Amino acid sequence: MSTKNWPLWEVFVRSKNGLEHRHFGSLHAADADMALENARDVYTRRNEGVSIWVVESKNITASNPEHNGEMFEPAQDKVYRHPTFYDLPDEVKHM
Amino acid sequence: MKQNLYNYILGIADNSLILGQRMGELCGHGPSLETDIACTNISLDLFGQVRSYFQYASKLAGDGRTEDDIAMLRQEREYVNVLLVEQPNTDFAYTIARHFLFDVYHLLFLTELEKSKDLTLSAIAKKCIKEVRYHERFTSDWMKRLGDGTAESKAKIQEAINDLWTYTDELFHQTKADKAMVAEGIGVDVTKLKDAYYEKVNEVLTEATLETPESKYFQKGGKKGIHTEHMGYLLAELQYMQRAYPNMEW
Image 1 (tube, helix red, strand yellow):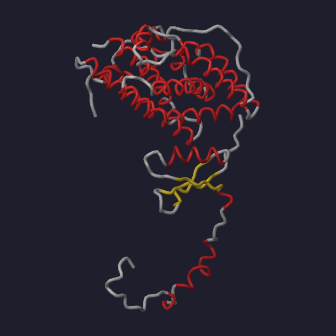
Image 2 (cartoon, rainbow over the protein chains, first blue to last red; image 1 turned 90 degrees about the horizontal axis):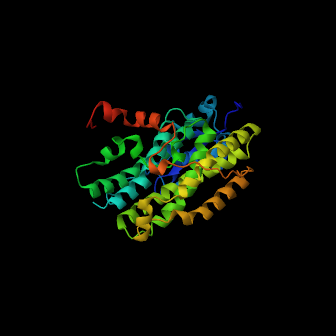
Image 3 (cartoon, chains in turn purple, orange; image 1 turned 90 degrees about the vertical axis):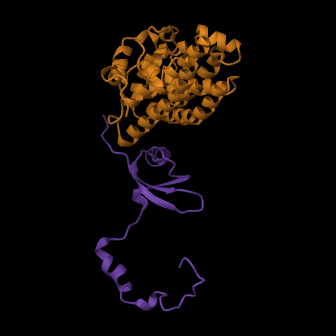
């Protein structure tokens, strides 16, 4: 018997029209078609979605946690990069 | 009571009930987490269909028999499912082959049942057909993957198809209830589905690079309540709770 594992896929689901696809999780499948069907069975059987994307995990390039310092921390001490110095009129909602 | 209609509904629903039970047996035992969930989902689809049929049957009976009574408390000889659906999950190839051979029939059947003069049956068919279209897609895909996969998977799925082939002809046998319901424009004339069935099965088998069996020897009996030796064990598991704790609810 073959013991080779199926490759890993990442699953993105759009929960309703107008919203963006969001990462739901991952699963194993032999190819893209099977990944879609598996995603349907694993993640969208309780009305969770109207559209599914699957991407083989190896195609995702991720940032290295070891580089978090130079990647993300410089943003933290520069408050002037955030638009927080405006007085918002009361009429403007949802900001 | 409309006895013919009642028996006719049981003839449809028992197939889904017994096949659903077989697929449910794989819960926690599927070959991979993903296929395990897929098989269990299909099982739940089938049980959902069974509930619609038995609720209708219970109403027709009108004597206090509930959907659970009809599903759980009959004797083996009173179940009228075809022999095909009670065959065991010998391995994944058998599981897929059995389901595929039933799905092709099931989809053709429901497409016709949707035109029934009985509005309840027509509505149930309409609801079920989307689910069954997915089942057929799922099992047809797996037929092709296994047939056109490795030498080992091909040998196994071919063996499963060869073994289960003998149970396919029974799908197209008419019972007394069938004939009565066809005459009233309520039932589906299954004899007319036969050509389309073998054509579709052959098409998938060819694409899966598998041989279509040529055997003309077929088993029958399920529709009359005469089952294979596997049925008793299946019912023992299906009925255990209701027999051990009568009327239990949760």
